[in-house]
Image (tube, rainbow, N blue to C red; front, side):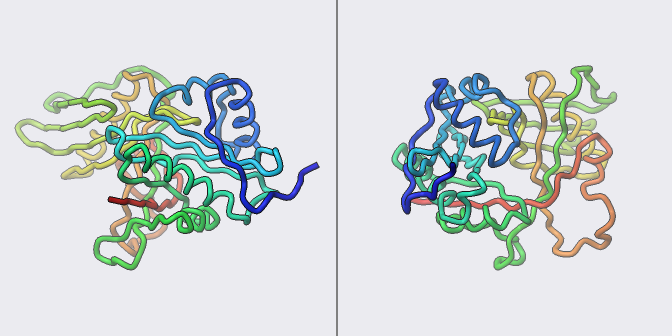
Length: 278
């Protein structure tokens, strides 16, 4: 029988041991249901030094979790997955999990944190706000959150698709950061910066910044990222594309058409919540 939670849930770090990963798997499957990983596969992810995950318990029952990992050489915490069992929602457990993860990160010397939240997920938005996060603002409308389109390419095969003649790629890596510079002849036509990430749901290239001078260059760059993900044997490429226009001229038209034409799917609108401290 499900019991009512105590006012202050107990929060503990999840270790990469069977008892903890089985508990994590149960709570994830019954709160989010996003991960196809087995408890053993979750243990492999959590054993990586940059990963931190926490379970919330009420009256000795595990009721919620948060999964995080560090990027930017340990300077930023990515609050990646957050789930609370349905019967225990609305009681502040999610915000306590976020706050606990942030407090521990600050003690380790981490300087900032962020989380990606769907535009229609008001519960998670409240949880991040209560934990001290604010949404990234629109550059020209500081009082308005910047909305991003989540574009995802799922890797389904490793058959390479080389760049056409005349196009050249310069790739540099530093830790888990990958930087791409795309040229056409003597002209720099596109560049991107990505993070290689491993979550409890997927491994992939996470696009931090991307710019291109034309739709053609954007499409070539979209393909370059996929080809790099294939080489690294990753699951997917993801890009939170900023929606710089407050009201698109044609709301029915596909967004970021060069990416869509190259096989990416539009997963909807998201906001980036962030927190920083000195």
